Structures are given as C-alpha cells and as structure tokens.
Amino acid sequence: MQRAKLTSQVLLATAILYACLSPAACVYEAKILAFLQEFRMRMCHPIPNLGLPALDPLQLGPAETELNNKYLVDFTGSIDNFQLHGLSDFDVPALSLSPVPGLKNTINVTLPLTYFKSLYTAKGSLAYILNLAGDGNAETSITNFSILISFRLRSVSPLAISSLQIELRLGGLWINFDNLMEEDRINDFIHALVNEMGVELLGDVWDYEQGTVVSKVQAAVNNFLGQYSLSDIIQIIIGGDGEGESAPIFDGVEPDCKPDATTTPQD
Image (cartoon, rainbow, N blue to C red; front, side, top):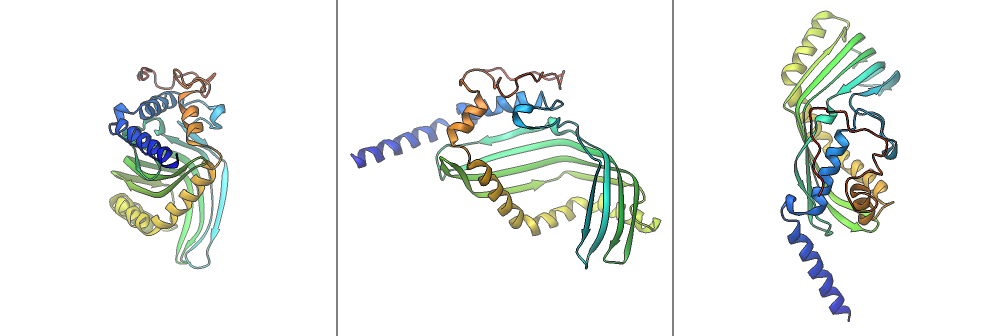
C-alpha cells in the first residue's frame, strides 16, 4: 500500500512537470501572468486588499535618516516629495514555475525606465575627508533594469523556498544631486564618475554583498510564506472561486492606470 501511494505521488509529480514545461501550457503560469497584467493596470491606486499604497508613482517622505559608522560615513539626511516613476512598466519575459519540490523555478522581471525626483538634504562627511553639503533637488534614472530570480520549493505546506539566487543587470544609470559635495570641483567629479562608471560600480557592490543580501531575503520570504500553503497562494492569485480574474483582490480598484494598454483575456 505504501509503495502504491509513493508510485502515485511520483506519477502525479511527473505529470505536473510535463504539463508545465512550456510557460504557455501551464495554467498557473498563465494565471499569474494575467494577475500581473491586472495588477499593473491598477498600480496608480492604493490596493487595500494587498496592503499596498499607490506604486506608480511611489511617493515617500518627508523622512529623515542618520548613519555614523565612525570610519567611513558620518551622515544625516532627509527626503521630501520623493516620487518614483516607472514601476508599472514592468515586463515578465520569462516565467517558469513548478509546484514540484526540488525543481527549479525562474522569474525574470525587467523595467525599461525608472526614475525618481526628490528634495533632499545630506550633511556630514565621507571618511572625514570629503564634506557633504547636499541641499536641493535629487534626480536619478535607471534604464533597462533586469532582475532574474531562481529558487526551489523546499516544501508546499507550509510553503518554503531554498537555493534562492538573484541576478541584477542595469543598462544605464544617471544621477544629479544639487550641491552634493562642499567643493564644486569634487561635486562635478563625483557626478561624472557615477554617470560614466555607475553601472560597473554598482555591479561590483552587488557581487560583494550578494551572498548576504540573498540570505536575508530568503529568510524574510520564508518567514512570510510560512503562513501559507501552495494552494493558498494559487487561490489568492487566481481568485477565491478559481474562476475568472482576481476580482476579490482588486475589488473597488479601477484598472484605469494605463489607458493605452489592453488587459490580458481570461481563459
């Protein structure tokens, strides 16, 4: 009896695997892509059922921060009227998911252009040598940002992941922070350096910090997912009754954030 049960589980897992070899053929992947399309059409509004504020533009501030590690940075700063644009322009060129524990899942999200504008202050020093005098407008834009995430399901009830990997790519980076450094010539040099080599510099920082960041992200994700089973997540995405679009999630939120876009037809 035990062997027959094990055999049936293996056959079921194999059937699911073959059914989902192509993203277009896997009903869960199709439903998730449809959900994301409905989501991006509403990102200019708060979505109460997801606990989210309006995300495009994402507005923050006023807020203050302080950092002093005694050796490298002595810093106090603030932002006000921060607005991040472009998050709803995301695309998902690759989505490969399997509900079978141990098999690799892949998600690729790209953003053609994101940019923010803010009023800011930045006072302090870098290594007690370069003095910060920031006060004014701050602007940054990022082009062709790509994040590739892969992971394996460790269990499905409660849900957990393992072997998380995150790869980041930037096509271009541009910054302009009014009066960032106390001396104009150093201010011009810092801007020229970042605008010329910022992609490479951020790549080096990511390579150095990637292991620590991924470990913390995986722990945070599993802490959140531990409240759910795989079936819970699927039901949340495809809707409580398993039919049509995710109306309960987006209840009362109009899909009018992208008037030139079209929604994905529902099966």
